Image (cartoon, rainbow, N blue to C red; front, side, top):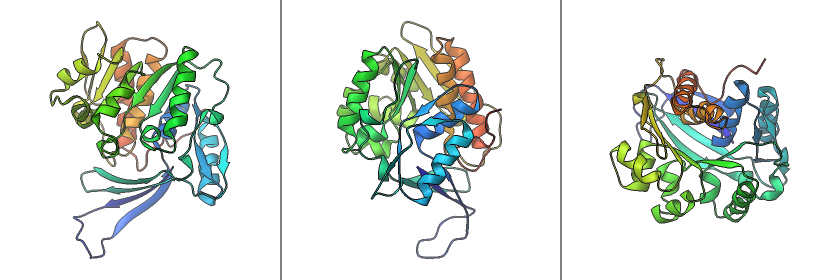
Length: 286
């Protein structure tokens, strides 16, 4: 996806011009996770599609620069996906996504899965009716090959399109669930994240709830609840922080590491991300 980010220094007044600092950069939840993984030494492959336009070719080149392997699928006749991101003076963001060429993902977009340890899956393609059948097939293929799946349901705004019952149906296909407090409450009905985690462990063997400035908590089924603090940082923009956290967590989780280490790794990358404009690491891997 292409992110168009407008950082706004004051309250927006409807119908009145509001000056903003506007930038464009690569985005998309899975692309962000893959980028943070690659930049921190973990090989990753992005399953996604772009349109045959300037934005699409630029995004593929950015992935190359960051060391992300990708499906390199350029779809004629459609536009590259775009997300408009409004960032308020406190660093909180409001997003307006258009999936564009990503609609219609299928097993044909997959590489050979030999040698892969884990699959990160965003909720966006499951919510998209054009991608849902193909992504369900992808899940079946990954599970048949013993590849563990970590699922991020994505924003409540997206989940509202399908409802709680359908999301909970999907959870039974996942090995790990990573989500924020708002999403956890929406899916489970519990405002207390500890109770929400306990409910989610009925579906998956590992659960992580991201709590923003309050850090994160996680639990493996049958194990103790672990909590970590957020990394000290200066918040510029929270866009992509959850994706960076997921990448840090996956690095340790996919290698069967300790839960505390995985949570600390996630908090570290999230702290780096919120200090940047945009949702990607700035430096290519060495």
